Image (cartoon, rainbow, N blue to C red; front, side, top):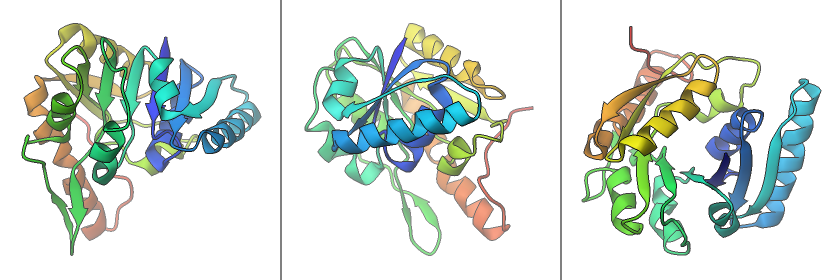
Length: 216
């Protein structure tokens, strides 16, 4: 299985690539392909020092989409629309959104688009044949990149496409200590996306780091 990460040189995208590349063929996309190649070279060396073989290849964002079976949009919400407007080829691909629409004021605030969630905005912008899921929304970038730590978190997954949802849940469950949960249809994504600013506020006001969720 080939997974393309659009925005794969950002904090979240890079961390996801490091975690996923020992398990899947990962294509790291960037607006600057040279940056993606450097990120992958460094990632391969980092994982090799930890005794892990991996599959990491750096390209531009469009090539990451073209070469992938599943596409992860590791894009900050403020750049989501402008990035998607430059890309194509999403037909019949599973597209995963970990995107959270929020702003930092004196605290973190959920600021959904008129569609109600980033996931529904993505659904509106992409071809109807794209198979949209939301997942990984509540995992901090620092947790992805802390390779010496396991991520013992729950991952809610939303989609209107049951087969796509199950495939994404299978990917989640391949990562040690992550546990995927079926959270319902795509319109429920707003509830999941709003958890991230909540978690950030809890971490800030309680002097904690990289707070996540678990279901017991």
